[in-house]
Image (cartoon, rainbow, N blue to C red; front, top):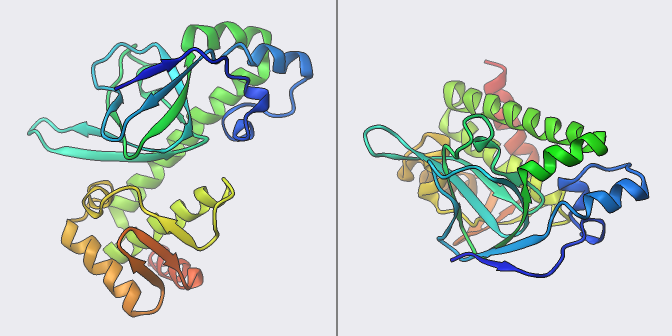
Length: 240
């Protein structure tokens, strides 16, 4: 269940600011940006930040925790469309039609900063860097979707899993985490849904990587022992 906090959140004092807010702005512009976020929300594991069909009102900067986004196909199947972590922005799917087109669910207890979209639009006129930053976020989402299409359309199972692990590792490292250790907040089944693979195929691929000495797996803890080998798997597919 969501519970809003009355605490004023200052973006200028947040250690994730450079990941989710524009950089190289003046002190005066930063004061304006500090008025963008007035509500912090805590979301319990398994709860929805927003749901498909819900009216779009705001974008959300993740302060802590992991999320997944999913859509439901016409025949009732659930398809995972992405995994989001601290420092990333959620809610962009709602801008076009003024309503959300997917569900956003917390994979663990999480916290987000709510940024009313009408406030973002208003501030963008005063702080051009904010508008540029929002455009960059949208562009990044387009690039990510193209990457997923490539991954699902042309990569073999091993290449998909290797690419997934490398991407996750890179994103976590940018947030100050280990260059080699991962804690998977999502299940093997959710990874399979995202990668277009069955649970059995994901599990079998993890086991093969472990047998080959590429990774070490202990439940949801994964240690990358040979990142170059993972890159070689991905690059081999790109060279076909």
